Length: 548
Image (cartoon, rainbow, N blue to C red; front, side, top):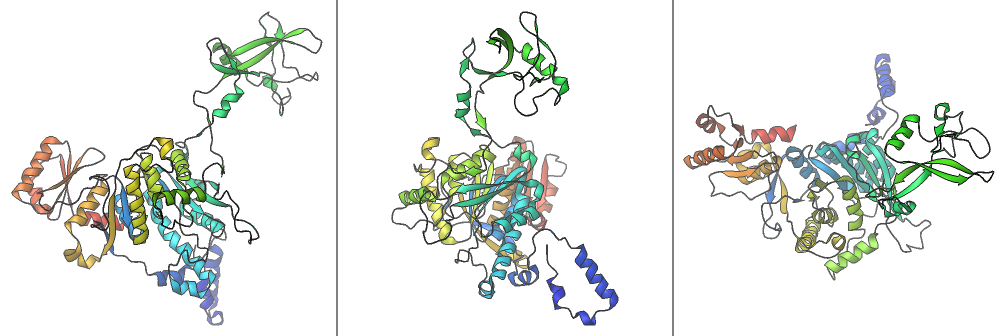
């Protein structure tokens, strides 16, 4: 993916023949297809932090909402740091990732490094690509094998983002680029072309696609205008093939006689006298007959006499549906979304281009089931988390800017209280749920002894095992939670008689126990010979996963 930009700095006149040949071989071996950007200088200047990442529960100014323990997480902090922490705690567990990243339009919507902005557009573009690449690389490892990714973008970086996603996720994972009509009213009349749409790039494995739901389509029932003797909606379709490839020469094995109710033989002849063919094979017609769906009718022939004609009966589906189209002009737009924001927060200037809840509901309804985990690491106004809450999905939202994270938190507080806007009426939403407001921070590895606190470890341990988050209790002999797989999980900060007694009690009540300890030696000695307990050292275990 990196270019040979460094080669341009060489003095070719001073190269030996062997050096020149070696350089040419490397150049020719480099892939010609794909996305190339100037990574060398960007990598040096970005100087991405390599410190260990920790999470803290927010204070009174960043309150968690609802009642603990919490299944949902609002993380405030650099999303690169948050993703690194999540790679330690949630690798392979996210069912759906949706992000609405900065579009890099040049209107100060994204300023990652002013030095590059001031240089030229080429470096702005390359820095944006590197910014996205770093985060998507980690996000890929968070997706479950049957998980799906959706990324909103516009024309400015849309084609380049598509190539970048191909690079990270693989072209075979690309499903489509949905087109969403984002406005339904006249736009700026001064522009040459009104930008009325955006794209949503979708990537998913075959396993993920197999889980995708189809959209409800009651209009399908309009084609079933008959009812059988039991009152079921049905239609009868001519058994003789019509249209393309309908001749005997097209499928010779599907031209054969059928016995009509009066014993006469019926062949699939076309009205023009040519030999046709049936739409079903012999085995297919036998199944129709066995199921009572081979229907014979007497209809007037060209000579005016009645003739036996076979039909295949089809029944209306109990739940009519069809695949989702790739063009979405039937969901709400930013205009309705802004109005929704104004209803929730009168007098507060809404976001410029907020995504409507109906759009997010379509994505989550298509790619997830209740209880699935959804991630949005460009949370913004909180639409993804709001919709996930209302639809019964678990969620993790990451927002870098403290002020925006505060807005999202306030919005989600209203959702928990049962705010009636967006998709609430459609779902009968009347409130519920909650989330932990976490704040990301960094701890240098050399400062573990001073800066890594028991509360940091306990939050990470709970997240790793799918334990709903509860605050660290300094008065408890042992921190305890129940993992997604049913095992009991505990953290022992100091091995005391009370902690040993608590461990014994847990072993009596649970088939398996995992204990994390800062000093695991005494605990191992006390529990020697017990096969139903596993003892892990912290922070060693966390660091190993963090650096994996």
